[in-house]
Length: 267
Image (cartoon, rainbow, N blue to C red):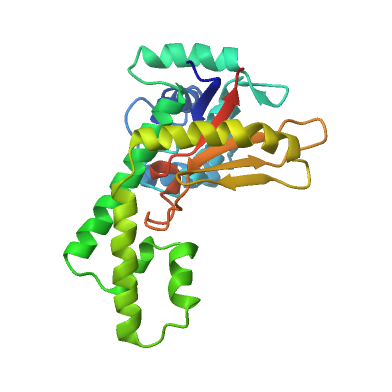
């Protein structure tokens, strides 16, 4: 059965084609690849000449979060292309861009199957494999607790465990059990969880989100959030991301490595 959901990734290298074309049109960047440091010099030079470009300022600001990777964000794409209609993503316009991107071996519209594989890759690269490696080399408790979230930390803090040795032993035990959980993750398990969670909570979240509040739900593998709307008649937006947070990712690089998708319901 074909899913009724289409997903748009928040950070996607496919957007670079249009973002760079816009900067070239504005005579700010050329055809070659630029570094964040070069872009900083361009900003400084523009400022010295009394020039300002709002789009380039936002582009550069987003780039500063992770200088090694260009800021290929969907919200920046929305500043240069008409991909919204009445406050909502225009599926027809985005589908046209997606068809163009696929000629370059890229895509903009994703399925839940695509996202499930992406989430599985995130869990493997940033949680399962690194945790297994740290346990193998005998990393100390401080390092292992970087993989913990409230559920795991509460087993140490909430149980009155005192003494360095006891805390270390408990940390090691929790880390090993956590690795067992991570190792059991598969794309199929994530897909089943993602589909059932979206079916159960997507429409509920849209109904409950308002200009005053948002809605969120976390399951075994995914987290669904519906951001509060911009006004009474404005649509709320649904996002889905992995259930585990990204404390193991270098600060500022969340947008690059942490898969977050905007959910479109085309039922």
